[in-house]
Length: 466
Image 1 (tube, rainbow, N blue to C red):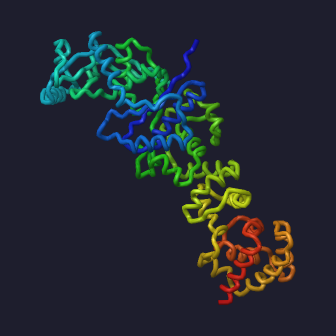
Image 2: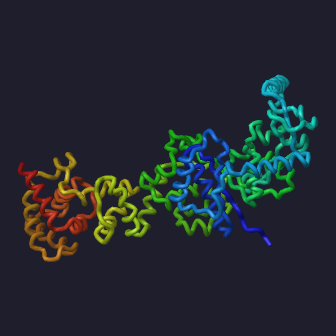
Image 3: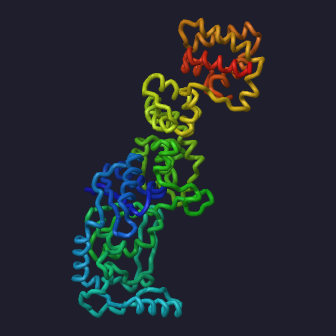
């Protein structure tokens, strides 16, 4: 019987969760959910100087926004030193590790000597067979194989061959008693029964050392999938100058988590020509054999276009609820309900983000509209006064303020003035919204409501007459 898949996401809490880290978390989470396996969260905080609680909190917030939940954890490496110590003892007992007392100066001489003779600057094995006892300044080194090869069978990259003579007896435990990264990762993965490791291909060079540790501990190797990096548009590693920010910055910019994970997954994974995926579709379709070998290129414009598609596809009441914090940032405090839903319905087709939507919604909430100077100069002219006055009379007389009746009112004014709809609608649009582009004129008139519409039209007349 096949073991259930167990994946993990092990961030270091030395900063916020960025795009590359979020995609790694997502691939592991999706694969665990797709296979009905287990997803474990582990905080790799052995770097006591740089690890902070605020970074841990930021990682949790980002995962929560993305909707990535975990089945076990969070485990903290800083609380597991007794586990690592026990495995160090085990490796010393089996002869796979040893105490080394070479001083930093001696190591520097070794490195220099190796470089002069065209070799790699690595540890030369001075203490390897000396059976030194434990002492205050000793480190513990792994006794690595000198010859042969270590072959990584990678799901994404295919076989990668490492010559063992290129590697050295790396440190497991520093002289201050803190364990090293390559050591703790393996011990954690073994003790947490991780059998699938999906991570960035910047970890490939760590893998042969980790595999050698697995073999020394007679533990079964996990399935490895090293995924290509996420690059900026100039095809260099994604950094702040490309707009690489914390994941929660994208939340604050008005992106939907569904769109963000859809976009992240598509940076390096594909399913035919499909671009738009719901969360459920991603869980259903995600598999390791569809991860590509080429690096993903992060493009904020493509993310925005996909976000617009997700806004358009989402339930209006749901979007209205998510819009509230963005409206309150602007000082608007509407209630959830049918009126706000109508407002959102008019804005959904033309908003790429919730920030854009909140900006565009302003005219619905203000008491006095501010006109864009160009719009006012072009459309709020003396010629517009007569049709605006006629519309005020028509609107005042309408019993039921519906789109249908409003359309009829515009037609009546068109007949009275001999003007086409555009000649009447554009000045009215500027009077009601302050700008030349807005949702459909009948829709917005109905939503703003009779009293406020008439007040705004009278304000426009006063502006024209002035």
